[in-house]
Image: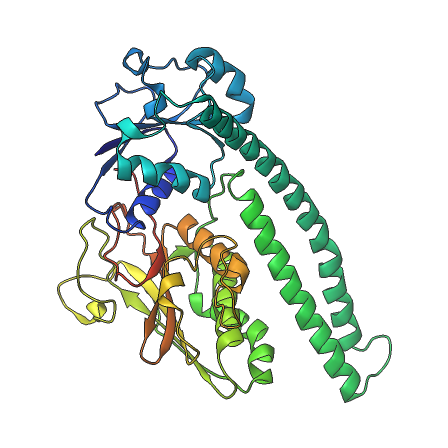
Length: 413
C-alpha cells in the first residue's frame, strides 16, 4: 500500500512511521512518504492530509474523501466542513495523539483504504463517528485542564523541597540525626513528586508545543553523576549496588543536559523500584555504531558493533541493566506508551509517566530508546547521535529485535 503524508511536519512523519513499524505484520505492507502540501500530489492508496485552510483539496479527492485521513485544527473545523461537505468520519483533531492516530491508521493499512470508513455507512455508524470527533474535542479540553493543574502543583512542591534543604543546612537551629533523616526523606519524596509533575506536564503540553532541545556540547558523565545523586538515597534503602562505567565520547555529542539527566533519573528510578533488595544495577556508556537504515536485521543488540573496524561510531549508547524480574513479553512493546500500565505488582511501566517522558526526550534529540529482556534481567538502552560537521544524521529505522520496545528518531528524506 502506498501511503502519502501531505504535511510539512517531520515529527508527524516520525509518529506515523513508528506506529506502522511498531505494528506486527505491517513492516513490508506499506511505503510511507512525506510530501509538502505545496508540491504536486502523487498517486497513493491512502492520503494523510495535514489540513491547511488556505490550501484547497485536490480535485481527484472529490467523492473519495472517506477513504483518507484528515488532521484538522479544532478552529479550522468549520472551514474543513465547508470544503469537504461536513465529512467527520475520518477527521482527527490536531495535535493528534499517538493512540488516536494508531486507532485509525492501522485498520486503514490492514483492511485497505477502500474498505476503511465506507461511504455506505448507516445512520447509526455516522452518529458514532460524530461522537468520536466530539470525544476528541473533550479530550483536548481535559488535557488543557490537566496541564494547567499540574503546572500549579510544581510551584508548592519546589518550595517544599527548598524548605527541607533550608532546614537541613541548619541556619534556623541544630538538628539531631533522626530529624535530619526525616527531612532528607521528605526532600527526596518532594523531589520525586516534582519529577512526576514535570513529566505529566511535559506529556500534556508536548503535543501542543513544538519544542526542540537546546543542543550543546557536554559531558554526559556529569549528567549521570547528578542522576546518581538523586537516585542513590532510594537505592540505599534497598541496599542496591549501582555500578557505573562510562567511556568518554569525542566531540560531536550534542544534548540538553537537563533533559538527558531526566532520562537517566527516570530509567534509574524504574530500575530501583523493581530491583529486589541487595540487587544490582549496572550502567554502561560507550561510543556506538548505530545502523539507521530501513532494513530490518536479524542481528541481536548484544552484538558489539562498536568493537569492529568497519564502521566509525556515529552515536553514544547507554545501557542500564538491573537484576529485577523480566518485563512480561506481552507488555514489552507497550512499555514506553503514555499512561500504559498492566495489573499486578510487577508492573515495570510505573504508570507510563517516567518511561513515556524518556521516549519523548530522546526522540526530540533524534535518538532512540528501547527495552529488552536478557537472562540477567531487563536492560533499558538509548542512543544519541553524534553530529559530524557537514554530515547529516539522516536515515531510517534501526534494526530492532522482535521482542524489544522502542522509540525511534526518523528523518524525512
